[in-house]
Length: 259
Image (cartoon, rainbow, N blue to C red; front, top):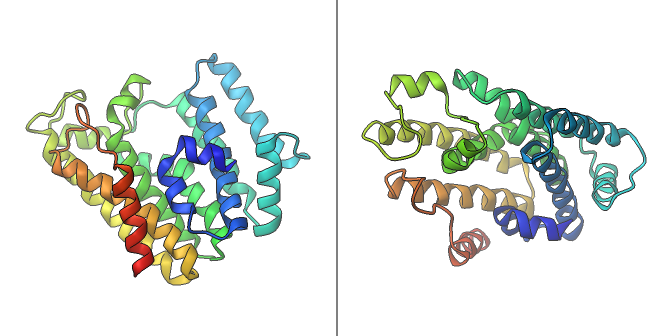
């Protein structure tokens, strides 16, 4: 499962490298489950088959594990008490992607973010050894908001717009494929909201042991670095990469270790 994490989510891999072995394996198992949900929702199967497979994935949570992913996740659940409802929420998020492509308001978007990213935070916080579920949920939402800003073009290619429709109208944004005068203030508004969520979510660190806190702060630092790069690029998320280089990611980890 850690191989999947390294290949498919470099930010995740850099964060979990600082965890003890058993916690690292557990978080990797959570991520592998989340990736399976994403792959089903974003894949090329007909929607009815996607829906059926997602529901099967949920049902498998209550059955003896058979696949490598299921075995790793079952072991993690047994060791750390990862709540089933958090994993089920991830499936709900995948199902929502099959039905909903636009989000009228931020409240609507927040509900979606709770399912696809907040739920990961809730699942992982059990592994970290904290009961601060609310801040784990908030941090997950903040990181997802940064993902949404970064991936506007990619999401649009899938026929989805996660940016709140009422705010696009308020800022007079009509084009989602290039930077316009209205785009920059709109994205600056989104960036500020993401930062507020991340800042509040990082209060979770007070309830964590040192290595778990370093893991979480590394995740947050990597996403914050991407947000800073977007801002420095004038929020041009269409023509230039906002992802951090390997050296920049390692620098985030090193700063955490030196604190």
